[in-house]
Length: 314
Image (cartoon, rainbow, N blue to C red):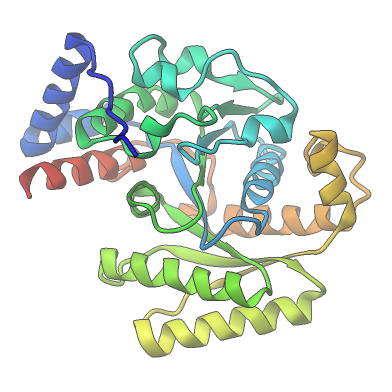
């Protein structure tokens, strides 16, 4: 099989990437960049394997948080197999690939799917996005910076598994939501993701567990207990259990209709659970007010920039 070759970036993009690396290596410059960032909050939605409803959780959680008055952007960070646009029943003309290639600004590809919700399309089948190098990643991060002025919250629907980009997004986010189901393979793989994150962060991880597609709350709690017990015993990390979303046939039908559950009539059983998860996140956020805007000393973008800088030094 012939290797996939990343196309060369235009000179202006290379210059911007070089500038970003200089920012990371110079502490004073990072502080100046920091002063311009109001601090959009960020949540990375993760899973150990596909098929656990991760994207559905990301989409409906975004809608539930938007109902609280937040401006929410969903970044389809499944870089290569993006599907958030499908769940909303839209066909964006441009995607993240056009941004990476220097053809569009991020603001030009964002697609509004609700009064307070926008999506950033990832682009299906863009193989080069799944393995972008540090230079391209740095440039892409720079393009994300305008979100700090426009949005209160960025939700990242990541790839399943432990790809390097998944770890980078999770480590840079304010909160990582690990999604699993009661299936033994899903439980095992979610523990694998948690283990990788604990190793990468040396236990300094802000994460929470959500059990999806459970038959009831009792089964969900039992699944959560198994993961919590294993993480305490072998990883010296106790992951908080945020809650569950029970199996709901209406959720499956909403995917077929390409209309998220929370955009429906609200009669579905799962709706109240998504709203409950959103309320818990809202209440437990920094200073108890997720929507409160202020200059922050450490943000999603700055943490990603630092990671890119650290890789360059290795």
